[in-house]
Length: 269
Image 1 (tube, rainbow, N blue to C red):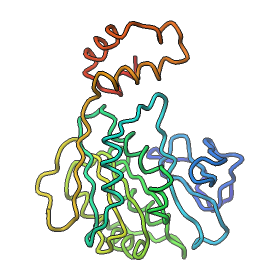
Image 2: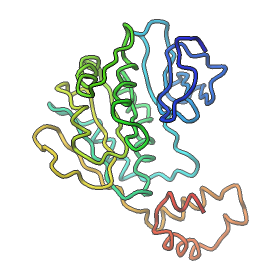
Image 3: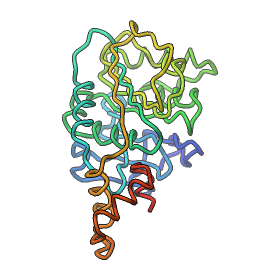
């Protein structure tokens, strides 16, 4: 790794650079996955750089969004999210993905945004910021760094960072995923007059005091799994363990009930 790249991941996982040596990356995904490009990610990191060119202006940035083992398709929810992302609007789109923790909100979003036709709709990048694990000013700073081509802009003011990010994203088709959003104030730093920049906000509940006129808003509630989804998840998780895979379905339903039909809890069994 060159000196230009920050060589050690930070605690919040946003350490990355443009001149990365793939051979020493902690977590490498190559081949045909993710539109045939090579991506690199720190094992503890959020930011991923697609090293697909030599000039900063030709680079595109995406995240490797791990689905983990045992993902079960939820076609109706996936279709609703896809339709929201691909819909036409004269305003900036805000997609609110609500649900209690453990229902698989983030995993559902990751599954959908890594589909090739969704990536094609946002060719200039996919950005992810987790507001529970990184402070807002650091998320803004790393987003700016992702698209900055002439030195690294820095500011102690979140509003200055947000303004500069808006300038960098003007004319680009980008989707920004903000996980663990708790306040409409957090969204204000990512609004953009350009309707090409779409926001996905993953939250526990509907956000109060949201200005309905400022966005083209789409809402998606992610509920607990139903019986058939729970059974499919258990069988997917246990497919490498024949004895567990053959457990009676009634027992699995009871177990799912005791775990409140939350996929995160079922995966931890």
